[in-house]
Length: 96
Picture 1 (cartoon, rainbow, N blue to C red):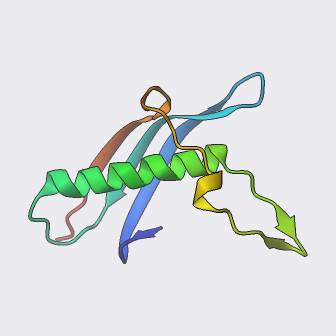
Picture 2 (tube, one colour):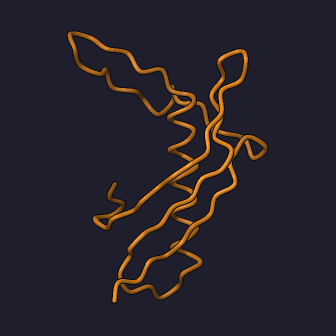
């Protein structure tokens, strides 16, 4: 996966309840961002993207039409509340 043209490696622990609800319990992302001036800002951006991605994966309903995925509009995706957001760890990788 690429984030802003840089390689990012996400992983997560996902569970499914008895009612069939999917929930992401924990996420971890490793990213090679190149030179970083303020690592806290980079980590915050990756955390926000990971949270949005888990909301889209768990809350979006993908439909097919003529063998193609129909576009999903942003207003159709449910945003996670704070108590639903997974714990997210971000590791910045530095190539040597």
